[in-house]
Amino acid sequence: MTAEAPAEDEAPRPVRILLAEDQGMMRGALALLLGMEEDMEVVAQVSAGDEIVGAALTHRPDVALLDIELPRGNGLDATAELRERVPSCRVLILTTFGRPGYLRRAMEAGAAGFLVKDGPVEELAGAVRRVLAGETVVDPALAAAALSAGPSPLTARECDVLRASADGATVADIAAALHLSESTVRNYLSAAIGKTSTRNRAEALREARHQGWL
Image (cartoon, rainbow, N blue to C red):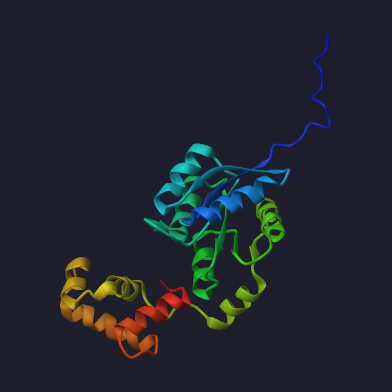
């Protein structure tokens, strides 16, 4: 007696999707819209950066849709960790902030795609299918802007000092937080101000964030 062959018309397993978005209304809308696609299933939703990898390890999604700016972490750092700990999961960055610097950092971290949120849902669903098939999907206008903008002029340490300078931190505060001397902090701040063509550290911080370098 021979074993019965599986039915040829058996439906394939749906694409398993993880959503990371801190705005509840947006997250719910994305989950609803993607869930309406016959070949997709949202298996996990998180609202903070430090929840992404744990959810991916638990639910083993095929594709992770990550926002960049999240509480307690960000989508770019999570992308790099996912590529290391859940390599089968393809990462698609979906953000409000279409900044050339963010695109470069996302690609360097191992993201398979980068889209802005104002696109149609059909485009998002298509992008999910394409990255799962091994393609790289990037918003064309943003890709052109990233090429013309060039890489970030700031060093990693200059970025650290600028981040630490937020919220009115003094030079002494920054030095203590980063275990540097105050003179070294001043040198880094001066270099960052010069490279961003700004007048002070507040403007340098704002410009670096605007460009997506931080």
